[in-house]
Length: 244
Image (cartoon, rainbow, N blue to C red):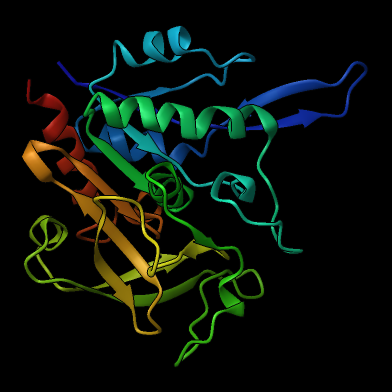
């Protein structure tokens, strides 16, 4: 049996009469989970987030992928809104941190991607840089799409990390399309930094303490599963989800 892997989704309000909320998911996330041997389950965004609803959503799941998307409301980490910050839809903003904390407390295996990486840190008390281009960096790499072309760069992975063992290397080419990043001086509790880009931007964190599986990456491995070894991140999640 394929383990059931929950996948967070995005939302938008459609300009109809009356307006309607719509949920959507980039197919690459589901494709990656399937290719890794899991059964993808896109999660609804309930209109009312309650502990009972969160627990009911978690109950059938064996693992979780927290996906990319627009920005968290900076009020969640005690900051004023930056002019470039594009806060995600209210349904998702109300759900994301609450659901992550519930899943984290339940020790469900989690792979957190891009926004998901930032959610993991904020959920554990960390802070974000709301616009990475405002952070002094040398060299200043492009971390976002440039003139409709994807940005790519190398990340350096800590040799003794679980991430290095999963991907089998300490240097990895990744794609990049984010304008926010985790503040490496104020990360989430228990999240060890295990990869950085050459300009010092935090690219991956992990918490494998006491048998936990929590891996957070700033890039989008779901779009690179045809390029070894990015599929291994999803395979590692599915393997952890198979364990009782």
